[in-house]
Length: 242
Image (tube, rainbow, N blue to C red; front, side, top):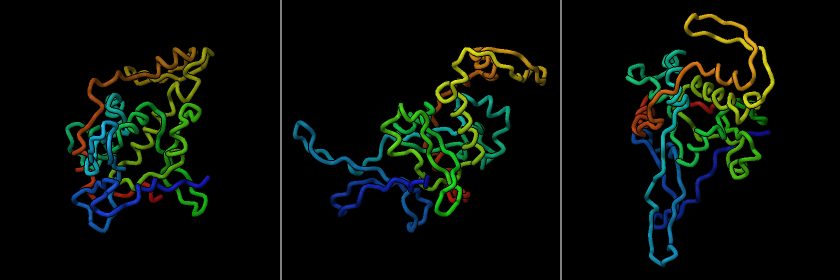
């Protein structure tokens, strides 16, 4: 199945009747396309009062590829080595681990409804990132718009963090029924205290409990949009070119 191109922005109209809002980082060349474009809402409300918010860009949030709640896992696996700055006091907040999303899409992202996966495009056989929607039967509205859809060009994001997010999305009860069953499994368990691996027979519910090595990190999962913007100032590779 070919990877679909990014969604087209709403068609532009004369400057006096702009129907979309373009978001451009000040460090980007004017010849570059805006990073984001959002449809504008113009017209009359039900009370007949005219309102125009065409120049307003709102409901934009920053998400972590490796979730903030898993910061202990992030540090234990030295994921900060893939960061771009290397000087952030909170390595998980490094711009290489941040992605800007519309608020509704961020909710779907955080609830494991979709993730980014590398897929081979049939026409040119190149590999590129594409959105992959899980549990399509529960996401009838999301699939036509976003499933197998290529995102806009992404800069400054570490591919290793994207892969970690892919694994985080898959290994959950929503996508792998193994975590919800009652069968018994032979598993290998890692003991962080002794740094040893041991074999055990556990039921699925117990497996789900045992694999949670790290407690959730008590911090808000939202980051400042300025940190995401700062990351774009560095010269980095574009992720979805291959």
